[in-house]
Image (cartoon, rainbow, N blue to C red):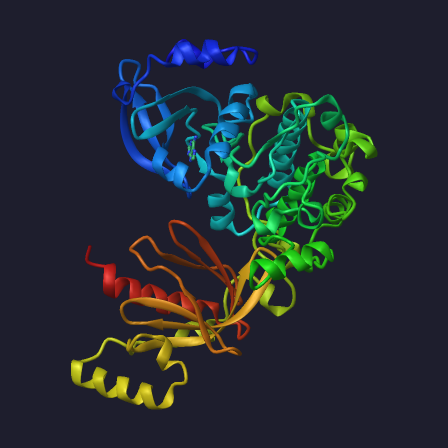
Length: 466
Ligand code: ADE
């Protein structure tokens, strides 16, 4: 890449412009799309000559003008130009042609942290501590430059080759210009900007002013989400989420670690000046002293090996002490292994007959798109520390639908592919591994192995000959 990769943080805008003017789209071979936003598309690209991989954010000028987003684009460039820290995406250069603007960025090969959170549903304490420590060091640096991110969320936290964070997306950032703006926690001017609903702080909603502490609120939401699988403030729609935020209306699920709970409670405080980590509360030094970060080596995070990403699941193999009652005995009840369900794959006549019968007698027929149900039953579908009872319907196709049995609405489908793999952990718990997500399921009837057997049978029928 050009010498601009090693630019010092202080390089002036005009110097940068002169150097970058040399680049054109022809200097890169564009590859696949790796990110898409409302106003931009990010491509993986290789620089001709050096073969270095980069991420290129491409913005359509017309679209930006039509949507009046010029200010956001300028802001993003201004912030990225100021940044020079390992926990942030780096801007190598910018250029433009008649129709588009191009931002050449460092490529975070491991993608979004959100991808891993979706895959595992939640992170264990060690992963949460590691990633939150890195976010804190990043925020401390960002705030020291007078910049508030204002849209911090797992989606904007990318990962490099070594699984260290690379914070991105500064279109919503605020740069505090005057000294008085920088040194008071309040940025002063009212602003119409509101970030992503679940992570937005109460002061942004009530007084329309963001401060450094607004990013600490988002951090509190992120810690909660890493450990539990869901952000703390959730509503059926944005307005309900906002109402819950301003009322501090949230709860901790059972099994939430007590030290982490204490930390989250000290971050999710309505008054921004009372949040742990705010200047009024002793700044980052105080936040870093919290018991939750006891094991963090603050000075050497970039050199610390990232811990393997492991879900936080009291009650499963990672926390065996939480397995309770008779179901926690190793092995399975032999009696249950004897019964093999072998119906399902029938002659066409028989199938049509059974389908007609299903339409008349099965309340859930309307959810399965006229597919014959091969197995159904109530299953607790876990997501981190949360659990929801669902009617699971394994059908020909194959499909694995799940329906809210109370509201009688289809909630989703576990995507089938030849890579789908069920795994029984004990009588109750079984996993369904898919390329993008591992589903954690609990059979209240303690017949997890029946599900695994039937799913394997269906797998063999559809994919066994490939
Ligand atoms: N998605 C958006 N920006 C990215 C980047 N810089 N690297 C990897 N994936 C991205």
